Image (tube, rainbow, N blue to C red):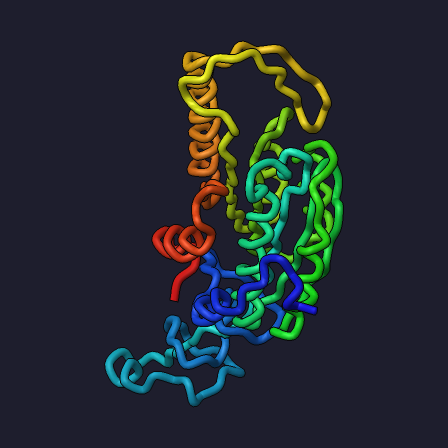
Length: 296
């Protein structure tokens, strides 16, 4: 039952009922929805004027313009359509780190995104990936599908190595229509992230990237010998942990994040960052709304 799902919070989801996912670009949807489309239609929201052409509905002729310019001009309106939202969740081994784990945090965000999209008649697809696609549900629409989405999220487990480039190329092969693609990951990829993101951009998708961090379980003023393991490859190294090394690690982490930000800015990818020690509801309502990712 839905009540047994770890991240199900009906009170918090109720706060999201009047929000919707913002698309920075216009999409050509296939079904009626609540947002603008590239296609002109018959909604009540005015779009533009154009010259009358044989076959146009004469009811949309602007007679005021005709009286002034002696030209027949048609009023056109935005069509109302839905969009597709692809949620891509990194399920590689490193996402199991943290308390709560980065994967659990990603699931909570995904649950909110799914609820928001389905409430606004948009279509939703959720995919887990590591070095390959670890699970997928195809495009769904309608509020009743939310239980199915939650059940799918509940079953996702962390495991496997990271291969972002290969996974994104596989995913781009079955995402034929343009969509909002939301990626939730720690972005710890030995082979990089740029090629994977570019493969999605080439498909015409609007990409939103959410980087999820988890604080390491050591503090400053530490001084001890440690054996550090790579959770995905099993490789390890001996280090002497002290304040100098901690500062060097923090500097490297900031540089990595700054490189991601610069690439996203250049590629017109919306970038967001959070940490598992940030209260979840505050991240969703404050950070998302302040950056116009989700708004009323």
